[in-house]
Length: 415
View 1 (cartoon, rainbow, N blue to C red):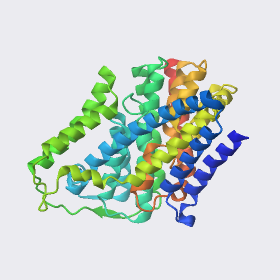
View 2: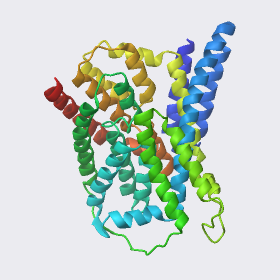
View 3: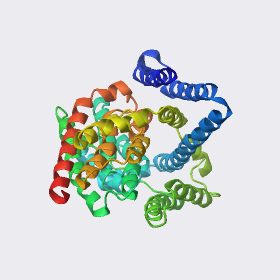
């Protein structure tokens, strides 16, 4: 009975996100309230002092995961807020993209850029930088929403082929189920499915875009901070692979270097201190993450993820992997993958590779299914759960095609 009630709170949170435009209640507020309420109920209904200690332990673990993500997001968003404010993203776009191009060509270029960036750095950074790139163009609302959705799908797709790109890929790799050279094979279905989605989205899209070339000059400190940002991304990847350093630690170190470099510098006419750019971080995004992850933690506590893992084991792995990817659009893919690894299913190498692709990309099907989607909802004007949902058929089709290609290639090379 208790489990059913708590599950209904999670459903209510989902509905509050779906109907945000109707209720006009910020989704960050509703998810945070229901997430906190669900854990409060777990404490109240715990079986004695030992039960309360167990719930406390689980909450501490959940809050540690949330705090890690919060700090990581805060560090990344501060960097991106600074670079955006200084016009450095716009300058980069002018250097990389043609001065005149069609909207269709822009979709393809943004898709490949997002995919490659997410393969070498974390999804959060890749999403923020890619959305900043999209914002640099004067796009109509419909094209902007398509582009943002494409970024979410591309970012999640790029992350599956390297252990630096997605946490679930790293988890499966560390368990010894796949090897580095085998994972690289997943780049093929990722690229094909992303370009296919860009092609779908380009239907009916017409028009040329002309970016006005603006000569920009940057303060030496601006250039130094841009270098620190990209050095931090590279170091995050290297330190994690070579020494197992958590990405959040490297990014916080990079952020502290940014603050030290700008300590006494005049960055504009108002002599804005660089530390104040942390105020530009949109805390609605962080609160939304907090509420969502509290709810996911509660579902893990009441055994919903374990039930999903048990159900997974009852069917053909090729089908179960595909469905697991779809489920990851509703449940965070990290605890879902952890539950599946704990269940220790007997899978062949091709099936492990297919599962890696599925849980990495499947979260793109809904806007709440991945960090990239949640960031897009918070950063892109007009992007809501419902507006994202209208692209579900195209996302499901391209996910399905990508999954099929991943399975076939893995079977051919490693079957």
